Image (cartoon, rainbow, N blue to C red):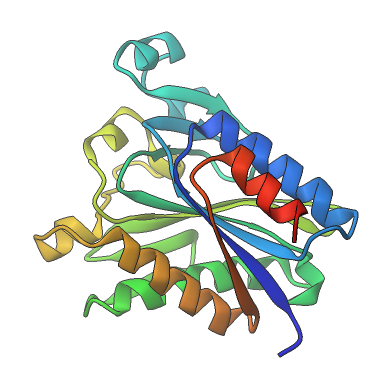
Length: 232
């Protein structure tokens, strides 16, 4: 196994900060200054929507969401509207895609497989939907994907509902799918799941599926993560 990936572990990071960190990592990666990366973190309550956004996907307007403490960001990723919040683990791979596959859709399936393996570890039956990207359990969506490929390098990524409050999903049409149900590991297991364990499981399955050796960098802020990387 010749490939290496930096696994960057952060705590709660505001979405805008995380987006800027992704851009910094992408610049470092495309210039050959760092290896491929996987950034794992959580966000405060946030709605994001991608390039295929439609007004109907957000049930209310941005000002109304901000009044209830939920930030809203229009992004450059694929996909439609989704929600991020505490207790949901978000993964942002910053990598050279052709090192793993030349097929965009195969890359999406690889991200799905990471989440499928994690959820399956808890004895939950998981499946895919041919017509939709993402991961499903008990007829509800538990894993979400929205990515961007620029000059052969990836940004954005996946999110897995673990212990997060699911009620904010009611304020949007998740992924543009009318009548969609959402689930979390907590809602399916009726118990809180150790997030540290989830980070470990994601990392292990990611290493196996992407056939890469992992190098951990643990910090609590985007600034300290960037400093740690450039010092490697």
